[in-house]
Image (tube, rainbow, N blue to C red; front, side):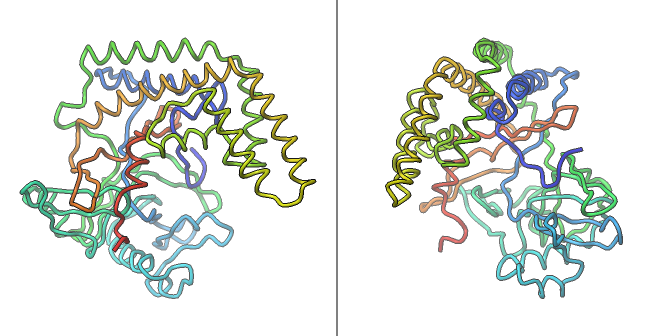
Length: 401
C-alpha cells in the first residue's frame, strides 16, 4: 500500500531520489521488463500504459458514509474537498468554467457505474471534446485532453463505443481505508465489476499485447542485456558515501536555488532537445544559475557576498565529486538508453492512435509512456522524456484558439 496521491518518478532519477537502493532498483526494474518482453512468465514486473488525460478525477463510495462522490486532488487536503451532488459542484468556488463542466459531467455519468472502491483516473473526454477528423484520408474520432491527441477509427468497434459515450475515463489507481484521512493508494484498478453504461467509456491502464508485436527479438534482448551490463559497471563505480554526500548537496542546493540542482540541469537539456548530461555541463549550469539567479536575484551587496560564498563552497564540494559525477552521468545515460529500447518495443502495440496537433494538422507520436510496477507495489514511469517533453512544450493545446 502506498501513499495518497501517488507521485511517479522517472526510472533514471531513482538513484538521486532513493540512493544506492534506488539505483539497484532501477536496474532490477529494467531486467524484469526485459524478462517480461521476452516471454518469461516469472518476471516480477507488470506494465500499465500512461495515458495523457486531464483532469485527474477520484470517484467512488465515501469510506464512512458509502455515498458516491467525485473529487480532484484536494480530496487529500485538510478540507477533504469532495462532491456528492451536482448542486455541490455548482456551489464549489474552487470549480469554475470548464473545470466545473467536466466535474458535472463526471458526477452525472460515473454515478451510473457500480463502484465498490475509490478509483483515480484521467478524464479523456466529454461529449463536447470529441471531434470527427480525417487523418491520411481516413475518418477518426479524436480527443485531446492534454498534450497528446488520441484517434480511433470511426468504423472500429472501439470507435463506435466512444462515439456513443458521453464521457471517457481511464482508471489506474485504487484507494482503500476506513476514512479519507486513512486512505492508502495502490497501483492498478479492477474495472470488471463497475458494470456497463453506454454513456461511459471506461478502461484501465493495463498494457495489453493483442497483436503479438510487443515481444523482444533475440537480437533486441542481447542488445538490451549489453546496455544493462554497462549500466551495472557504472553503478559499481559509484561509492555510497559519495552518493550520499551528493544527495545532501542537492537538498541544500534546492533550498537555496532549486534551478541549480542536477535534476533541473537534466530537464534543461530535455527542453533543448539533447539529453546528454556531463560533469562539465552540470558544473557550468550550476555556476551560471547561481551567479545569475541566486546572487543576481538580491539587491544588497552584503547578501550577495554571503550567497556568493555559499555558492563557492558548494561548487568546490561538487568538484571534489568529479569521479562520482562522471560515473553517475554514465549510469543514468545507460539506463536511459536501455529504457528507450523497452519503450520502443512497447510502442509497437497501440490500440488507439496517438498524435500531436500541429498548425498544419496531425503528426504521429508515441504514447506518453508506461508505468512499471513490481510485486511489492513499487512503481516508476518509463517516459521518452525527449519526445514527450518536446511535444509538451510545442504542441498546440486545445485552449490555443
